[in-house]
Length: 260
Image (tube, rainbow, N blue to C red; front, side, top):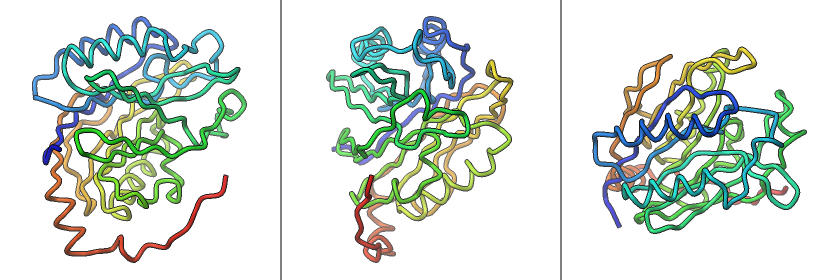
């Protein structure tokens, strides 16, 4: 178990529907990380951008991107996570992959597909919340639109880190900022959001606004807006332990189950 977890947020532009070029560009950024880190976080659909054209882009779980993540994770000795388009059992899924240096891969399928963009017409929604135990830290990974639904993120598992990867457009970025902070406060956990920048082929602009908040909702990152950037933040178990013991807000939470 590590009392300190170093997490690197990579806020990047994405080449539209070009997995090969995106892997090349991201590998350069990953290899350029100067600070020691335990986990690297990439945006949602980091090989393609937020595409509603899954058929030519989807990969199997044995595909090139997972192999690429496994190779880098093993070589560089840190975990890598982000979401890609996956095909499985005759369905396309917006799937987050979490790859660790020992070869373990965990995945989470986006629960709330973005109906405004028609995502529900192309991608099958996930049904399972996932808690990843990595280096003694309990991490809850979610994807973009999931951020708007606090019940799905409710900290009934005593997780330490809530993690969102996204393609969240600039016109609605105020909601992204407010909800990331709110999720940290209400769940008494660190909350990390990694969003892309640039323009996509639908002329949607992304300003990034990637950030990390502590359990009190204090922003502890300094990633600039509207540009590519990489930042490593340090999370401490002591911070979570101290404020949960002092404030004990989670002990007053309701007991409920989610019906799908």
